[in-house]
Image 1 (tube, rainbow, N blue to C red):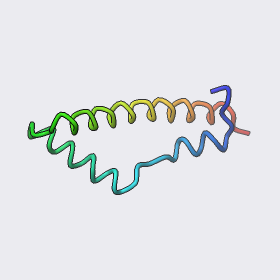
Image 2: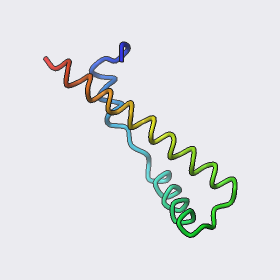
Image 3: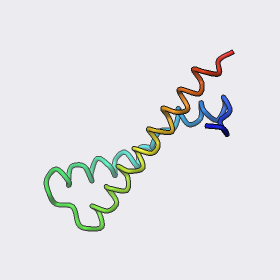
Image 4: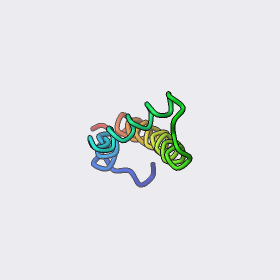
Length: 71
């Protein structure tokens, strides 16, 4: 958080996946629920889930930064 600026924090908070990625993840989620993922798809899905976790942590830290640096 030492490198955060208000502008950077807002950019991090506002990050979203594009529609193409949303569609891909929806497909992988469906296949995971059905138990039909290939090993490669399983790796891709796990990588996505881990990425979401990291991004969520960064967004929470950015939000905390902004709440502490309003003014």
